[in-house]
Amino acid sequence: MYGFRGIASTWANEAEKYRPDWIEMALAHEEQDEVRSAYNSALYLTPRRRMLQYWGDPIGWEGV
Figure 1 (cartoon, rainbow, N blue to C red):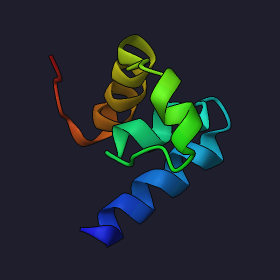
Figure 2: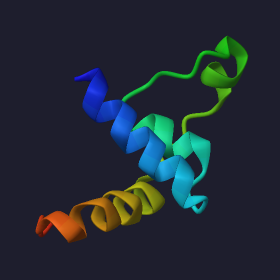
Figure 3: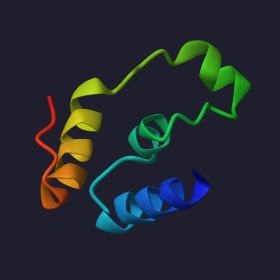
Figure 4: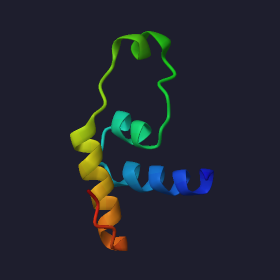
């Protein structure tokens, strides 16, 4: 599974249009900063949905 996550992370970071928070949350990574984790409850659903749809379009995934 780490191979796929590595590819997805590299793709999203190289695109330079997605915030690191969105990328990490899309990859199901937890915030390492305990203070930030305690106060930030954002899910970033809309930007994550756009990012994942953009990832899926070339492979024919129709999405939600």
